[in-house]
Structure formats: C-alpha cells, structure tokens
Length: 65
Image (cartoon, rainbow, N blue to C red; front, side, top):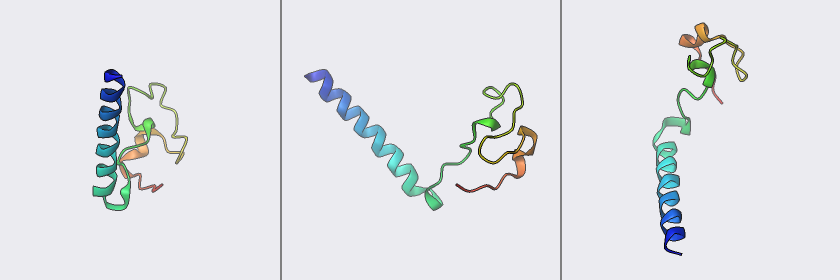
C-alpha cells in the first residue's frame, strides 16, 4: 500500500510538471517534437511523417500542430 501511494504521488508530480510546462509555453506547444530532427533516432535520413520534410530542411520548419 505504501509503494502504491508513493507511485501515485510521483506520477502526480510528473503530470503537474508537464501541465505547468504546457501552461507556461506560448500557445501550449512543445518545441522540437518531430523525432525526425534527431539524428540518433533517424539514422536513415527519412522524411518526417508529420510535415514531410527531410532532416536537412528542419532548420526552417515552422509547422504548427
């Protein structure tokens, strides 16, 4: 029971932290959410599944969710 209570408290703090981050951001958007921008996750240089840009085109990516 003690472990479940500790787990619920920790998860509550995590949700609270994410909520504060969304609230504090202008427009409530996370920056850099496209995984295709990360060279460690996109080793084959595939285009983004959301906006269709290749990794070398992300410096001027302004797509909003």
